[in-house]
Image (cartoon, rainbow, N blue to C red):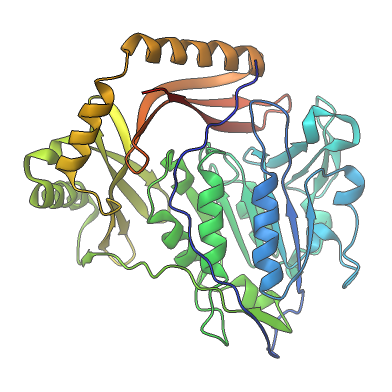
Length: 418
């Protein structure tokens, strides 16, 4: 049996993209993008859509994008016919897959051979202990790169990592993740990030890498470890402004401002301020909110509503910016009233046999352990209630390693019949 993700509701950013042909000056003129993702054929990890979605945004912003969803050694070493630069030397390089602090690896459908390819910090190419061929990014002209996105586990972990390394060696900006990151929640985060990055006022790109990250962070996810990102370099710039030359887009995301901002807050006072806010708004029901803390440059406190030991998809997100000493509060209650949620959950759970939930969790655990074949770091399980669809799911979250030591993580959902 192979586990498959169940479909569950998500608030997807609505994006209107209109192409406008205008002439714009470019600081560096490397108007290309290289986007990589793949179906690993293992544990239901498939980052194909991450790459194709990113390429769509970059194309509409005026870049000449190449997308690879079955990358090989030859593809990684090839050039873009638009400007004859190496693909790994594009204006924007977007990689979504398995990662470590010094590498990212791909292996289409577990095929091995030429499909078992990756990139690493450092100058030299080399073959890993289990046959993966790594291209050392130091052999590419990183001075020409506006943004490197390492969308994988631990690609910004520790004081020395691949995200930091490319900036130290010439890239203008990089983005990586300090911990494991869920491949279920990551696509939504990345989509929101790229949509915000592509936003314009009709003439100029209006957001920076930092503000695009904050926008994506302001939502609640099934797994909020997607907010454990770190950026290096000129995060106060927009890489599309650096890279594009002839065409820009007017991409418009849903306007999303915090419901209020608390200023002049010291870090040690943040947790108590958040609890005060929850109690002020929800009264005695504030005890039903669990607080998940994630983040790196900014701290994200996701206050998730729970009931009868079930985690929901509604709550409040508080983002603390230590540079500004501010807490920005975002409403993620999706227009729902707490008492109405509880009423619906009471009605739904009356029809659920707890033994069915336990059997499903046990089955998922046994299946994923067999499928991943002994390379699992951790497994967690919980029950999830989708407030909008009035549906209950079992969720199995796991973190594992591939044969080269690159990490990957996922959340497997199975709907419980009511």
